[in-house]
Image (cartoon, rainbow, N blue to C red; front, side):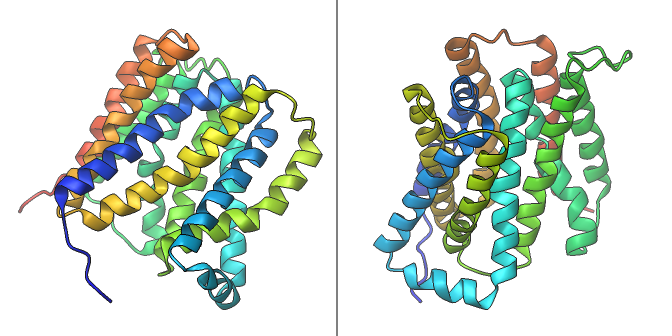
Length: 297
């Protein structure tokens, strides 16, 4: 197999493209949920993303890998599809439906800290001292956001919504733990996840919502989410990682996303940005940066 030539400039271009996509999704989630229920939004977005991913695999002439991969590990791919997109996005969309988007987005951003904790029992990794500092700082930031800065009273405006946002981090981290334990083509894996999730999402829509998808605004939002958040951004990030000479520098681009997202929520959704959100988000970003530090003895 021909080795991929590294090009940090290309990596940054693709990485910034992915970050640009991720920066818009909180706004897209909140606006779209004004017209579609969480299950309806997930249904249209999943179909859109599955079609996009299938088209990319067809262009790469990798469709045959779908059948081969599924036959080799059917239960594994069914589990992935159940977690992402089915459970993860149903929970996340419900959190966005209940909370201000700035809270749901920023609480969900702690998934990397959750991943650190899950990596201990499932991947056999150890937690360094700096990781404990990052975990404490990150979840303290989450508490600042959830209580709007009133930490002492522990007064949550919507405790169930907060719980859903934090539970989504557990699902997302679990999905990547499962990916880390299985060496397969990441694009094939994602495509199988979405294809196998479709029947589950249809059942969820029938149980908790309906198929009266009449609002064109909901269609536009759901197709946008499926195309950019669930599909295209992932492909761009894969390309960025493939070209990257320094993956740590590339990963730092992700920290741009939540701050840009807050600006979009302010200007497009009209959400007043709480000071506690900015403080809490800064704490979470600081925690994630601490995790990336390489401490020399």
